[in-house]
Length: 256
Ligand code: NAP
Image 1 (cartoon, helix red, strand yellow):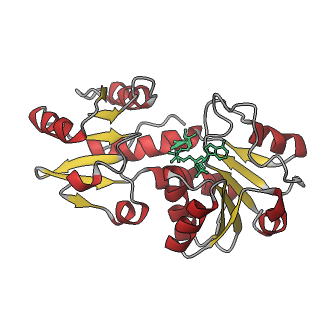
Image 2 (cartoon, rainbow, N blue to C red; image 1 turned 135 degrees about the horizontal axis):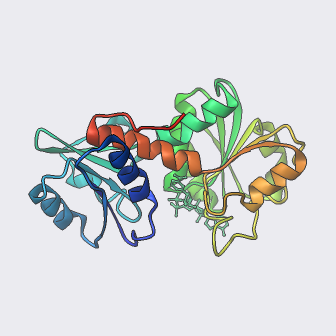
Image 3 (cartoon, helix red, strand yellow; image 1 turned 90 degrees about the horizontal axis):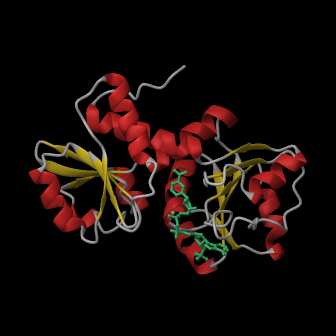
């Protein structure tokens, strides 16, 4: 098993997967493959008889036309982060959306009818929006480039606004949960809170899918006001556990 991307050598995924193989005593290994050509990599993966592999930036879209089959989630999200080999056929899956939603439901509870602001309209935001809509949340997409927010909102039949103080009232309407999916808060933007203009009351639940740093400026603002918060580490683990199951047929050995 392995992961393709470029760059990819920094990824934490081998630590997760190889840790699981070791605990279960499996004769398996998970390796990062830095490539600039996913089609050529597929030929290598077939030669190596790989059971599957993970896909990260910039190949989550490029890998899709190379697949023999796709899950409904990949079709809706338009991104594939997991490839499995079933009866010699390459099948594209998406484990980012389950990875995102499971920790949120575990900690926050049901999202049915909740008003959620989703900051960002990139690849990760799409998977998050798909999951939030599946759970019955009402979602407002908020993005710096408003056209991208609009495109996403139209696709998922939801509302959108630009990331600006002028839209404070709208964001306030959708503030049971606020999900942050942009790069803002991560190096080199670690000192910036993309929602700095929003007056938190302490009742909002804040979820930042960034996991380095553990507490972004966005989450710190929430902690200071007494909000409940969640970072992106459980999401990374959960999407890895789902892939582990798809690759090995076994549950990841999570410690109690
Ligand atoms: P992406 O497709 O490149 O999207 C980037 C998003 O960030 C866009 O909405 C972009 O807005 C916004 N943005 C970038 N710079 C900005 C700025 N200076 N001010 C305001 N908005 C800005 O990236 P992605 O793949 O969605 O990933 C986004 C984040 O999610 C990354 O930090 C990544 O580490 C994290 N992530 C975490 C997990 C996990 O397992 N925890 C999984 C996947 C991704 P514009 O449209 O205006 O450019």
